[in-house]
Length: 470
Image 1 (cartoon, helix red, strand yellow):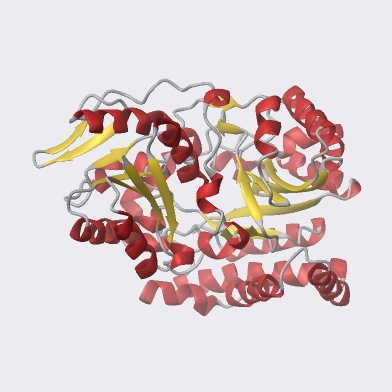
Image 2: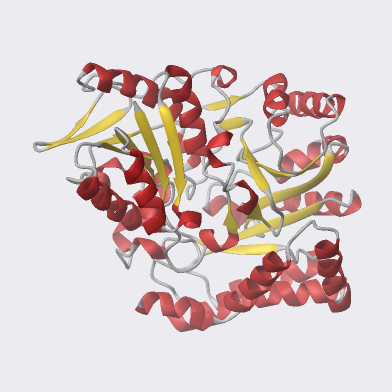
């Protein structure tokens, strides 16, 4: 059978889609599981194709099944719009919606234009679904929600969580024409790579552990290296929510990567307590090429960390930053800004950023995403049904400060981060580093322009206010 996978076009206002532009790895993984069974797959990234051109290519392909990815809550309306257009143009196609957001809240996707919602890992759901569809019916397939005229029908639970080593490699050949355009932090071309799924922690704002039903699975070091050998991109973003959770495995991965002669610029996400306990592990990974680390610090004190159920200590955040500076490893910090904050709370965060020199910082507004613990606690307080505002840089909860005052303080954080960079690194050194990055081909001039524009846009409170009147 023929299967089209479609990534919705860019939309919304700001937030996630302005900060990163990465490949649709989930769809590549599902396609990788279907192709060995004889299914012909195509991926259309409408962020690059454009909605009209991408849909026309999809329609010309005449797929039997169209898979729409709705990973982010912000993509909901765009996903419905695509489903309607596909239904109008391909009335006989079976339309399936999957991804994190759809899995967290399948009830919202009870629409006439959608046939099925795939819940959980697509590689474990879709092969059985395709087999059943060829056989004439899929009512018995585990891990799906079926939209019927009588309402939604939920089949038995998701398939058993398989050994990740047994999953096929992602079908990266399907995005070869798009691959040069993906980036993060000005680095391109960029490839995503997954070495583990799930998270053992229970942060109340996070959907990852909910999506994976509290499980945590890892690929073996040998499987990781096997996949790395197939990736041409010089920059790799490891999608694991906590890298190096198994320290022994982390060391073995580094050893095998070096033995294979692989050199990449790796960007990973991990916890500060892991860095504090095992700084030698960071040094081992530096030898694999280059290394940058994303740190979800979230809060600057223990009380704040407890409020989001982070299960970490503020002292670990401070120690980890000192360790990374000593090892000369680049890092980016992210903090959660609470709509209930007063001016003194913003001032406390600015002071912390300055004192610790964390100029590579981002600031997320605490956002209750459907399906998270936080949503269950505060959904009755949500102030909007505009899903595009759930982009983690707008407040969808009442603000203690007036909304305009809140955004003035919030935008000041972004500007402050830039001023701290100039203070600690110097404005001339900052610009010289950009020039050298362009000259050596590590980043493009367009990427630098986009980054500088983002800094300018995020430093203006009107940027965020405009979203509420859109």
